[in-house]
Length: 168
Picture 1: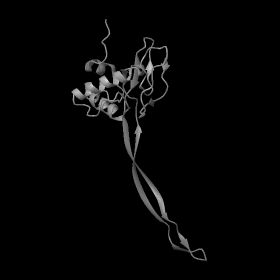
Picture 2 (picture 1 turned 45 degrees about the vertical axis):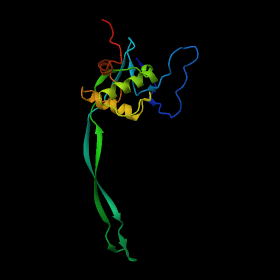
Picture 3 (picture 1 turned 90 degrees about the vertical axis):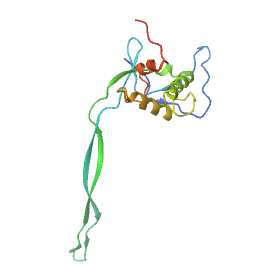
């Protein structure tokens, strides 16, 4: 199984990169996370796994003890109990089919932004950049269908009408 290189979200304010000479393809705007591909070239990712928050208590020394010249404790050490939350993962997320990174061209992302804008799920500008606002809009929109991820699920892209439905 092939894995794409780790997360590389290109959010530059620069102009998009020109197509590679001789390839005739549009530049790739985004490469997201640990995405696996199968033998058929489909891409898969996982949602964030479930978490559990524990309360951690620690006893810390606020002031050290003070002793006189004879070594007798004149002021005992002062301690305080500090509590803080600690969140840990307790399982794996759900595996889902996602749009493969090479699909995220400026034209595709612009179409995605327009599709989300029409559905009142995105209120930012149409930039063609898969930026933080776009990924948050994607995550919020598809959370309703059970996929809590900033990675665009294939079935959501098809429902939005921006990805072709394969023939049977």
